[in-house]
Image (cartoon, rainbow, N blue to C red):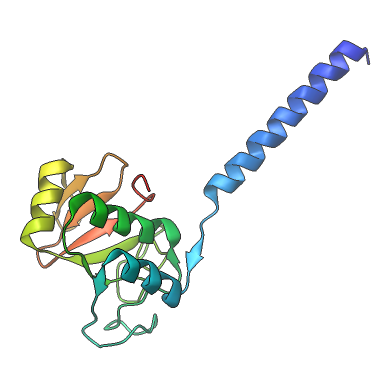
Length: 165
């Protein structure tokens, strides 16, 4: 093989390898423990509550953060900082929510209490994207692409990313 062609081939292989490495790193999801998520939320002034007064991931009346995606926790912190609103999380990774790739169980979603401040922030700053299929919950999308669905008693928030953390 001629040297110039070999150089081009080596450069292409190196570029392709770098692209694969970047893609793999970008798709990696960091999972948090209950204690790690609680620490992040506490530091940001975010509260959480549970109808069962517990954090067991396998009990539907608990509010668990075990296996929460780090980007999801960071997204809630970003919302708190950007809005200045009180944030109370009422649902995390515990069983009992709808299944799917981008689900509570898989660490992508949090439920948050509704209040005047957060309601006005979400509906005033984010873009209305229409009713959600299945339950017609009004949906709003942040500039980062995260989706806030008004389920009546709470916001069901899908974090694809940390929202600009």
